[in-house]
Image (cartoon, rainbow, N blue to C red; front, side, top):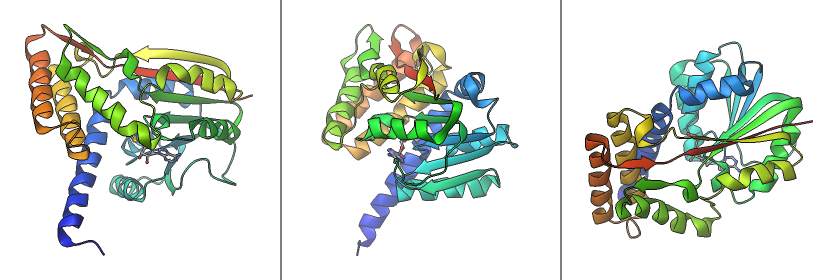
Length: 270
Ligand SMILES: C[S@@+](CC[C@H](N)C(=O)[O-])C[C@H]1O[C@@H](n2cnc3c(N)ncnc32)[C@H](O)[C@@H]1O
C-alpha cells in the first residue's frame, strides 16, 4: 500500500504529464490537424490513434470531425484514465479509448486511417507495432507516424543548455527501450512492414522561429520542468534553470534560433 506522500507525488507527476501533453498539442495546433487532414484524415470514416496518451489530440480532432469514428489505444492505465476523462469532459460520442498495449491480439480491422504521435519512439517492440498497424488498415488505408529525432535538433549559436536537455532524455530513456533518434529510421521501418508509397516530411513546428515567442517559452519551460521532475539527477535544478534562461532568451531577443523538428513518415497499406 502506498503512503500518503507517495500518492501525492504520483498525483503531481500525473498532472504535470497531463498539462505537458496538452501544451505539446496546443503548441503545434492547428498545423498537425491540417497535416493529418490533408494526408488522409479528411477522407477517412474510421481513425486509429496508437499511443493516444491523454487523448487530448484525439479529442480535438474528434471535435473537428463529429461524423468520423475515433479509437485511441493507450497502454498506461494512468494515461488511459486521463483519456477517458477528456472524452467525458468534452461529451464526445465518437471517441473510444482502449486500454491495452499494441500489438493487441484479435483487435478489429478495416480502419481507413491510423496515426501515432510521439509514441513509436517509446515502445521497444516498435517493428511489431508498425506491422500490426498495417494489418488494422483496410486496403489503401494510410498510417502516419509523427516522431522525434534528436540527431536533427540544434540551436544556433550552439547552446549547451539546450543540447543537454535532449541528451539527458536520450540517455535516461534508452535502457527502457526508447529510441529518441527514431525519426530517420521510420521510412525503412514502414517499408520493412510492407507499406507502399512511403514518404518522409520534416516540419519545424516546435522550433523557435515557427511559433509565437510566448508559446515557445511555455512549451520549452514546461518540458524542462517535467524532465527535471522525472530525472532530477540527470537533469538537475541547475540544468533546468540554465535551460529556462536559454528558452527565455531565444523567445525574447531573437538572436538565437532553436530547431526541434517533427519527422513524419507515412505509408499506404495494400
Ligand atoms: C509521449 S506520449 C504521446 C501521447 C499522444 N500521442 C500525444 O501526442 O500527446 C506516448 C504514449 O504512447 C503510449 N504507448 C507507447 N507504446 C505503446 C504501445 N505499444 N501501445 C499502446 N500505447 C503505447 C505511452 O504509454 C504514452 O502514453
